[in-house]
Amino acid sequence: MRRFSWFNATSLTLGFAFLYLPMVILVIYSFNASKLVTVWAGFSTKWYGELLQNEDFLDAAWVTIRVAFFSSVLATVLGTMAATVLVRAGRFMGRGLFSGMIYAPLVMPEVITGLSLLLLFIGIGLDRGVFTIVLAHTTFAMCYVSVVVSSRLVSFDKSLEEAALDLGCTPFQAFRLVTLPIIAPAVISGWLLAFTLSLDDLVIASFTTGPSATTLPIKIFSAVRLGVSPEINALSTIMISVVTVGVITASILSKRSAVAQQRDEQAAAQATG
Image (cartoon, rainbow, N blue to C red):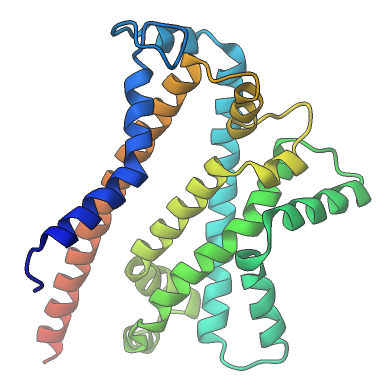
């Protein structure tokens, strides 16, 4: 282990301050009684009450949650299938093209992705709204899920799946009963990543949305151009709190799942030994 030094401590403190100090200031000023976000006028929670009465923000939040949920579910299913094909199918005709199409959104600028999807939806005559945003978010989020799941499948012990096949399971049953529970932490992590990316997206959603669907990032961006209001600070604080609770919960569940999986593998190894 490296010894403690003031240089390491200072570097770590400055790094965390650079990342999290703006969020801390935002949270503090969400309880500011003044309408001016740069002038502290005392502690107050009235802006949270004002936020709950703002129908525009509430509608945008509901649209964002729906889009994030459905797109993350679709991205998780498609990304897991793509990762399984890339890891398990071996070499096949068109593998390079398939792999490139899966990983292309990782390096493609969001402006290009959003513009190309917009032209596609216009070309096929699809009205823009919640459905088109879900399709767009699924397109760029599934590649992240594929990367996360494929990294777990690479280290997966295939002998467990082969044992299930020898005991009479069909390939689908072996995947559902053996493989999927073992790679579940990676699948859950991929779903959380896809959900977070959808919640945070502004560029692609702005290209693929329509007048009937406005996501929360688009609504916040439109409101900030007229000036930052205390309601936006309150809304950002709520989003930070929800994300923090979600990350902590997911970390605890993932750790428990990994410990249980390790314990089961040790028990199986002892039984076979």
